[in-house]
Each structure stands twice: as C-alpha cells, then as structure tokens.
Length: 131
Image (cartoon, rainbow, N blue to C red; front, side, top):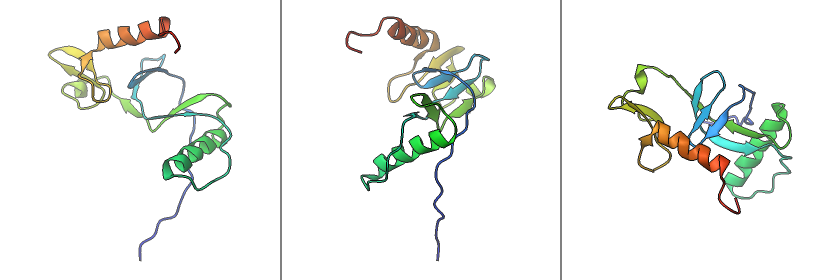
C-alpha cells in the first residue's frame, strides 16, 4: 500500500525583489524565475471549494506562519537563474541567443531583454487608465 503524508506548505523570506513580468530582480543583481504570487491575508477556514481555492488558502496560511506582514505580496515557487554561460540557448524566461539577452513571458514570442524591461518599466511609470 502506498500513501502520502500531507504537509502544509511552508515559506521563509529569501529577500526583496522587483517583479518584472517573468523575472524577479534583486538589488544585489540576483535574478529569479517567478513562480506563484500570494497576497498575505487571513486564510479563513477550509470550505471544501475547488482544490485550487484550498491551495491558495494554504499558501496564505503559510505566508502568515512564515512571518510575512499582512498585505505583503510573496513570490514563491521561484527558481534562481544563474547569470553565466548556461543562459546560452536556455529554455527558461531568460536566455542568450545570437549574443543578445532575451526574455520569454508565457507563450509570447521572446523579446530582447532591454526592450522587455523598458516596456515593463514604462507600464509601471505610466499605467493604463483604470489599472
């Protein structure tokens, strides 16, 4: 017989970063691939909704137990991106091709990293009306 021991998700702070689409950028130059974002809020009680609702509830609870302040946005399920030769032809959100740095976000076609960051910074500085 096979079985699983259910464990609650856990979180711990790794530092602060700016979310730029599919990338998290830290002040020290570290780059991470984004995972899931969770707003820290009271998780409430299990209400036996869909599995995805209960998973999000468990993430909120893990963020509180991990000591994150209420209202904070926590990025979790992230992966470090090494800034080295492994980026050449890499399959992740950041890669190097033809001597240029490129970014992928979801299913969109890759764009040069410079344009990608310029576009995201412009959205931050000039958000669309109603955003």
